Length: 126
Image 1 (spheres, rainbow, N blue to C red):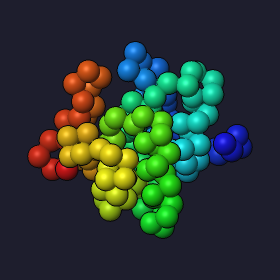
Image 2: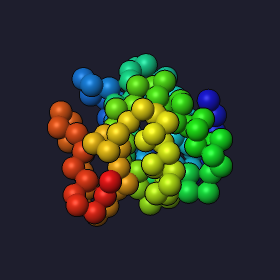
Image 3: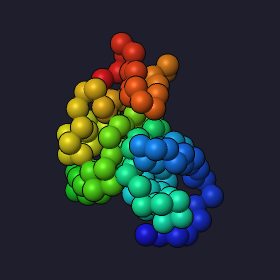
C-alpha cells in the first residue's frame, strides 16, 4: 500500500453493514490503494461497491487483470465504472472479478447504486 498523498485525487468511503462502498473521483491513487487504505483505518470489511472513475482507460491488460484480482479478493459485489475507467476496462474488470451484467456496468448519466437493491444502470449502460 502506498500511503503517499495524491492531491488531485478524492474518494469517499461509506462503511455499511454489507461492507465498504467506495465513491471514487478519478482514481489517480489506484482503486486498490484506496481500498487497502480504507480497510486499514475503518475495518477489513469486504469492498461491497466501487462507484466512479478508476483511471484504467490506458492501463495494460496485465494492470487491469491485477486490479480485478485484488477487487475480487476484497469481495467486490458491485461496480459502476465511470469516465476514466474506460468501457473496455470496465468490461474486463467485470469478467475477471467474477461479476455480471447486473452487478457491474459502465456508468451513464442517471445510473445509480442503492444499498440493498443494487445497480440501476438505466437503458444506456451495461
